[in-house]
Length: 151
Image (cartoon, rainbow, N blue to C red; front, side, top):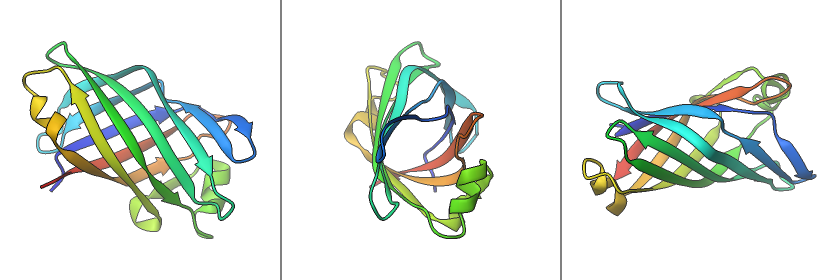
């Protein structure tokens, strides 16, 4: 059962080299998975430093900052792998919706906060599983994750 959900908008990548890109993440939200209510709004600076291997596998290096409903801040440090396949690669190119069951897209998430309400998250490791992804092309994309606490 997920603990949180994350939804984020993603801007078109700034290509650094053939295998490296930076994607700005300008907005989004952290939600309670049970009730679906928003517990935090994504704030700048937040972004994804993406490294693409020769095989096409993407190494994720994401930092997302949230302003929580109690006024405190939370930083989510996200690493992981996204492995496109022949079915989703054409969807990436045109910015079409890719569902989580269509590809391997898993992350490890660590959270840091000074919030008393969410300080328990400082001592946990979370696993994120992509539920929906739209690759930003000439227009913004988006991602939705389910976030599970590892016990």
